[in-house]
Image 1 (cartoon, rainbow, N blue to C red):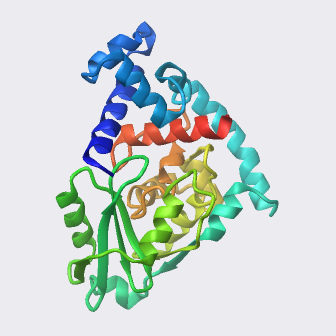
Image 2: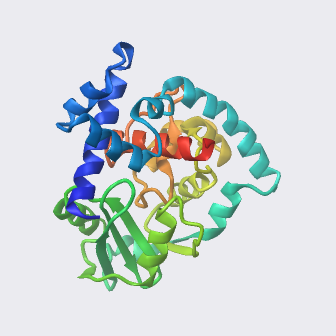
Length: 278
């Protein structure tokens, strides 16, 4: 992502936050543009190019009422998946393959692991993608590239790191573009407990444009009383967007937190909802 693209996304996220905070007074396009220090015409062009719709129309797709309607629809989607019928969730799951690290790999903090990483552009901001020889081990939004690298190194403090891309990164990038039809299989090599891996695998079943809840995920993995533990596992998801933890919200319809910025989660949900509805 170019510096300008990154700046534009940050302005879009700021505008979405302003719209949500002031939806009762219905701010004008000029007021929204002024809030992000842009002319009305320039802001309208930038937002529409990114979202595919106007700022006011976009607001409908990040409302609590819209979220609640998606949660109602999600029960049908989950039933369809459990019955083994064709669905976008099944297709997505087939393209994303998770391999958990062995007990030795999990405990030795990355000793003897060579991790390649680099920074890439995406629809929702700059990302850091990292991989071991077995698969992609980390994808994170990198508003601060230095801090993003530090967070990766904290997960595997004894690993050896090289800033270098590879074919695994390329496959992940294709899958990270929600409009890309040429998706290759992405192999993930993840450090997580058995419970965490089970939760992350369940997240793969939530199709783009749909939402689920912590309770629904707990029920799906056969542990309906584990909503809180599910929330903790979702919060520690090391693979941004491809393991779609951003599609899990509260029962109330509130979007809740997101480790890579709640406004980014809102932007994702709104963008996906609009583009699957049109």
